[in-house]
Image (cartoon, rainbow, N blue to C red; front, side, top):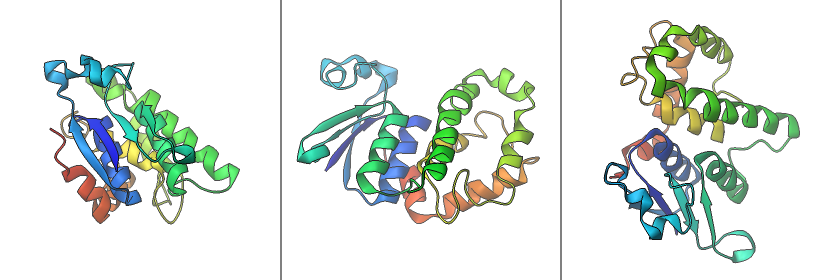
Length: 191
């Protein structure tokens, strides 16, 4: 069973949603970042960046245990492990990688800077990017890029980013939250 070391944050939620969608058994090990538990030696032993989430998989490559830190790396690892939520063709994988990196370098940091986020004309670009498609990088089913973005979109109200002028984003959000496993992933007790 995979150990998910995390807290109730967007980066933690993207992993719980992915694990649920992938049907992988896992246990939650809360790391209370408001109490600086991310600096505990036990956690730092496999998460040297002192950030949540991190995972321990006793059945890693070649049947040997592995630890993975950084949410994007975890999503890539889980997609490879399960063979799910990552297109088989190179062109499709590139699209997922692009959107995953966009979330990691753009959407993730931006809500932390709410004023900057609200002042930039990025909303329209995000909405047009979903025009005519169900998911951000793939058709038919979501990819790990959707889970990554969903971890942050889930907090859109808290970040004062309404979907009123983003109908494609709103429809995507509703589609994602209508998926039973994704919904379970956002209901998992992480703290």
